[in-house]
Length: 302
Image (cartoon, rainbow, N blue to C red; front, side, top):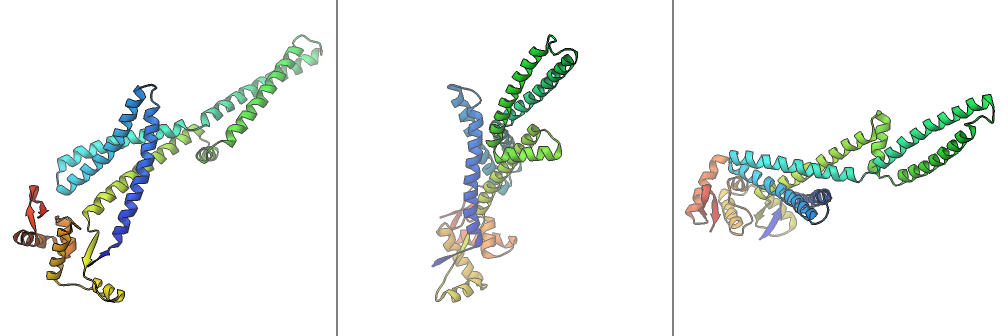
């Protein structure tokens, strides 16, 4: 006996890897945010809250999906609201962490100081021009020149600082700056918007892979078919419509080997029957002592 894997088995591996990557990214941003909320021993408390919120997010997703399959609408609403709340907390942490890493604030401060210095330089140059019209030795000319030299030197230093800030700017900040220049919007506003979009994208991917993993576990990951001979003959056999009795025998083997769970959906998919036929198959499994009836009419392998 060999196992013929369906393509969704490969998809399940992709889902697992995707969930691990997105969960690690979301957890990292949340840890960075909550651990920086305070200092000392209390930072450990906030760190614990952040980690618990991330774990609770996935737990609530599992509970929401599970109760959805069981038809418990009340619990679906409750756990769904908890999921939305915890996702909102995670988005808040991600956005705060992304905003905390930006250097645009420093650049914005430098630009503001440069504009102020340019205005003061223009004023001093105008004062010198007016004074020299009367007399080069007029009182106020020399102090204005000294002030002008000081402002020019300060401006040069700020320009060097701005160049250093620009060279160390991340690609994310470069994108925000480009959009700001194109749309005429402040860089801070663009950066905040992009941070929110990235955080929402991350949480959306976390939710996607988490639900995909749960759904793939409820679905039929593979079927077991008896194979013999060459690979070509095996392929032809796997594509044939085998009889109902043979399918039932394979269903029993799959249940006993714990390859599938004997729930309504898996039985229907495995046997390729309509939903109204599943009750007959359930009764036959119970009569042949393959399974026993558990709570909420669930079937448990013997």
